Amino acid sequence: DAEITQSPRHKITETGRQVTLACHQTWNHNNMFWYRQDLGHGLRLIHYSYGVQDTNKGEVSDGYSVSRSNTEDLPLTLESAASSQTSVYFCASSEWGLGEAFFGQGTRLTVV
Amino acid sequence: AQTVTQSQPEMSVQEAETVTLSCTYDTSESDYYLFWYKQPPSRQMILVIRQEAYKQQNATENRFSVNFQKAAKSFSLKISDSQLGDAAMYFCAYTGTASKLTFGTGTRLQVTL
Image 1 (tube, each protein chain N blue to C red):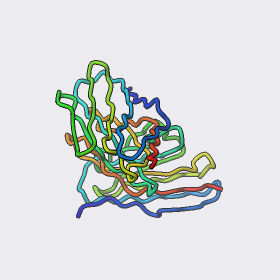
Image 2 (spheres, each protein chain N blue to C red):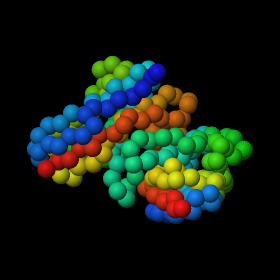
Image 3 (cartoon, chains in turn orange, green):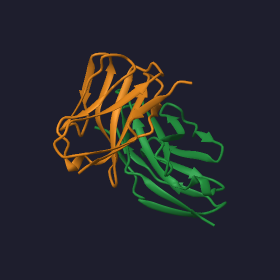
Image 4 (cartoon, each protein chain N blue to C red):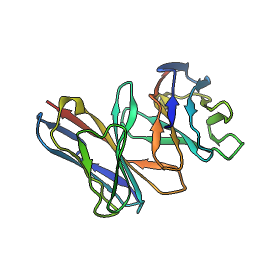
């Protein structure tokens, strides 16, 4: 069965360190997204990609970057982790015209 | 930019009763989808129901149905015969031509005996 997986599920890191969260999908979807979930804010879009070599900033992109070298993967990098980036991160994928997005299990990141 | 508003941070319903969760949205697009996602304590995002804007008929999935009022930009979720397993956070979401999901802030639903 097709799926979308995130790793790690949980991570604790120190302020100032670079951190990369992995996202891998086997749906063969062109569209991939990274969201962060915080209490009182719902899920907010960090970065997204419509295909290989395409990346775009979302509403809360400062301090994050992504790259898309193949269809299956969209890793999210925190260049210098800050306590404000403590959150739950979700990766999602979708295909044009279908509307529905499929989500990974989420990564809980704690920056200490 | 599109916005989605959920004005009920928490709701409570007794088992077997019916509850309605509210959602309003704002958009200038004519072609879009609306969704309700359920997030139980496991954190998994589970699609409950979807509605295409061009369809006048309200979507229904078993005990879940929506009241889609396009002119009023309202999209409420009705859960009938509530069960303990319905307890979760519920998110209303919008996607349009850009294929990006915009979420509301969520409604936490408690189900009591």
